[in-house]
Length: 317
Image (cartoon, rainbow, N blue to C red; front, side, top):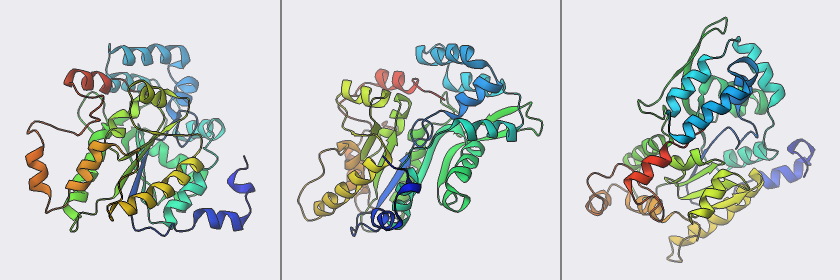
């Protein structure tokens, strides 16, 4: 498949032009393994920190529940001893971007679809990577919801500044719910944007379960988990697949307002929130929701508090 640089300009204009639908949409996307095929942290740790062998041991400690993601991540980032610029040079040569991401991002811009990165990584690294691979102007339109970091000039200290004070450090579900709360306050007519999440790993589940539509990279852990637990999702190989599906979904969802039903791949619980979250509907929705329920989850799978807690621990850098 040709890259964006090899596609004639006339075709690019056609592929990124406005859809012609009224549906408001917002995209949240993972970064490592989703926009880029590799993991930024892994490249740095392997080359300048704890090394691949120790990293694999630490990853296993997270998966087994022996240690929290936050605890292990602090050890991984703390193992680095490299100036930021030198580390970035390794990322430039070691990262490969999804071949269709740039065109997809242009499509989002032309359709007024906010595109947000939501990551457990470090924001300064992710911003610098995006600035390099898609240009500073395009990068500036992408909000990055990730952890800040303190990195000294010599690179002897790399310390995450966590977004949330829990064992995840950055709870992606909480970040999406922060957006939902803001959308609820701003909505006057009940038109809450359709929330799309794009990911690749099981660590994306906390955010994915909050979305109306989930895209899981084909053949990787998130798709495998969705299949095993009968979670509604749409597979993708590149962002071109996501773009085609969003156009279809937006048109079907437009018809929903005329009483013609919802796309079959909608997360029913998230859609309940979306339909009920206008200012006028909040009292009704509150009456339908248990008082102690902190977040909305996929009803088919995350039905027990114990199960939800266990899945929250399965994360990667």
